[in-house]
Amino acid sequence: MSRAKNPTELGPDALLPHNTRRSLPIALLRAREAVMGHFRPMLARHEITEQQWRVIRILAESGKVDASEMADKAFILAPSLTRIIRSLEERGLITKHKDADDGRRVLLEIAPAGMRVIADVSPESRAIYDQLEARYGHERVEVLLDMLDELATLGD
Amino acid sequence: MSRAKNPTELGPDALLPHNTRRSLPIALLRAREAVMGHFRPMLARHEITEQQWRVIRILAESGKVDASEMADKAFILAPSLTRIIRSLEERGLITKHKDADDGRRVLLEIAPAGMRVIADVSPESRAIYDQLEARYGHERVEVLLDMLDELATLGD
DNA sequence: ATTTATTAATTAACATGTTAACAATATGTC
DNA sequence: GACATATTGTTAACATGTTAATTAATAAAT
Image (cartoon, rainbow over all chains, first blue to last red; front, side, top):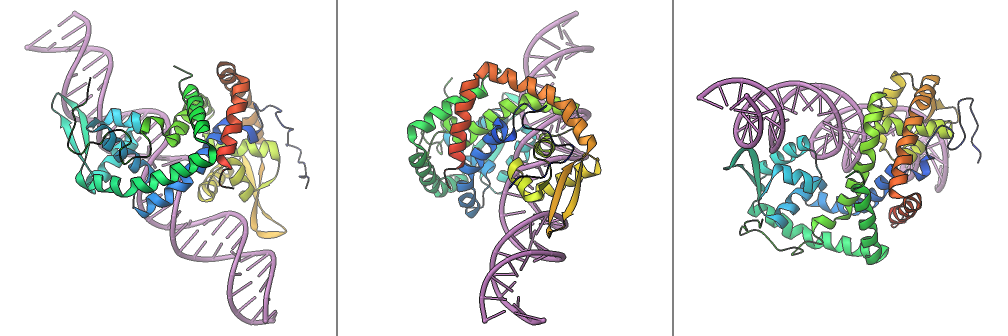
């Protein structure tokens, strides 16, 4: 049904870069929500948030990591990471130590309790990801990842 | 330099769906930050956040919109949108009214002050987007948008 | 050795994302 | 008309994103 026009309404693209239906930032948000929407309830059942999961996954994968490296790999801003680290440490899922060689640095490691979370969550996470790849297409996921990576490194 | 292994460290993909370097959710976040990282400082100079910009842009484009429709188009959760609407209304950039036909609904409209923000921000926003498209490739942006849209509508 | 600059992480403050619960209103059934 | 169910938007509470400032430690310059 046609929408009633008001005096301030402009036509598509008038004064605007693109109509919002084809906005890249919103498209990226929608796509991300479509993916994470499957993982989030599963993670919630294990009482862990997406960001917390990213942190402990990276520790499981990479071993001892300093906070700056973690912020980069998990793509979490430093102030947010500080809070997440505190929460995970309080729950006993990770440990945190000062770097002996550089007192400014904080070193993170997964704790045995964290490894148990990894062991519990990973099979379900894998199943969700496999299903997504099956539906979207494994090759197409690779192509998409390549395109996203090029977009992410455009400014470099 | 090789990283010292600890007893809890697992090899790549062991128990994990994919190594985090090729994680789709993180790739989508990085790509989005690469795009928004150009817009955010410009929007901050106009004293408006990305989400607020999305809301007034949609109002400029679509005229009168109800809150549910706005939440969908701007891709903002309802509780977040409630706060954003309040903020924008307090600043006089938009107006909010009850729908005469349905007392549950809230109708939003851009105000003249909001149109001035649109007029001020749009040229800069367009310039940033054009530059991004020039570097990434206009056709490739279209292809990426199509792939993202397919990913976003996968569960439908 | 001292001073200055830089780096790493934290803190503060505010905005938004997220889930659950709630209030008001509309719709459907009997 | 009464009642049950569904919808729309708000509120509460907590997590994370974001920017600026701060603190502690290290590196570089003098």
